Length: 192
Image (tube, rainbow, N blue to C red; front, side, top):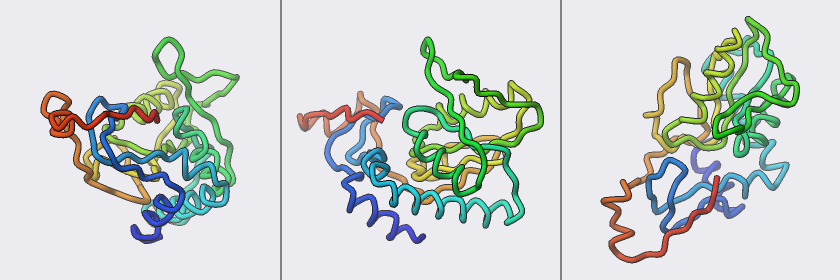
């Protein structure tokens, strides 16, 4: 999928918002990807996830094998599930407990298992890194991270490749120096 096709899907599903937003990272921006809006359409979620898997296979090689896909809840759940479906592997997720991502619900990662980490959007990559740390702490391997939108424009780095459908360098502002705040534009906290 070309960037223009991905952006068209986000626009059509009202998943690309414009205004004054506070991101989960604490930064402010005039654009916000509300991936839940595109993921509410199962066929679009499937289409984007298949395109992401194709990009992963092009990057890592067609013979790449995964034992499963793990996603941080909440935003990555649908992406992880659809990517796992496209790869024909199991899908698990990490969720918050006492402010920290953990595995629950009987999910197990065995030593040597290979997990793709899937997420909807990354800006700084904190939740992705937490998820990678969970897999590695249990003896698993993370050959790659797959995301729909890389808002970091490739600046979010991990010890494995990041494959994204869309890589952007959106304008973000430190809250103390945000021109949108200075203009008095109301801020929206759209959630992740």
